[in-house]
Length: 87
Image (tube, rainbow, N blue to C red; front, side, top):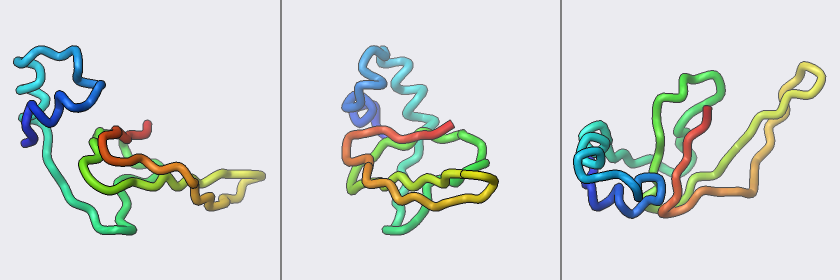
């Protein structure tokens, strides 16, 4: 579980009352990932919203042209204090 104070730091939760923040906090877990670890991959169910507490998350995309995949490494990254999730 993460603290309601932590959730309040993110604009996504700014308008939530204390009760709702407590409910969200009880559903939350803090995890640590090593450099190079994946948060999620294409075709996985979108069941998690990630709040970046430390470090950064790089966005990597696969683009399909004419039926074949091409790996694109994006220069964009999500940093401390930002939110990431993908449907």
